[in-house]
Length: 120
Image (cartoon, rainbow, N blue to C red; front, top):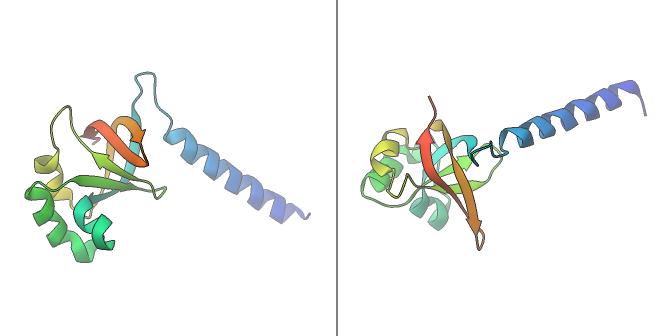
């Protein structure tokens, strides 16, 4: 194996490791994730997301439909605050990239970020 390929493989391994390390819970069980704010109804129904869907996503989130985050690693999370919806807070960020922190829970294939808050 030539050195260029070895260096490239090492760089890729380091990138994967550092990304995984970013998503590990801290001492309080909190993770920090960066990704696109989604309205979960349109995303799950027909894959709608991105700038072309921003106005619709904002309307859906403001109307109370579930809000989520498509993280940089491709995982999708339902977002809720501390026993309350985050729709009023996140509607302005529809289809935009934000960083959020919260506790991850997964059940029956559904990812949830609870007690979520936007990280400045």
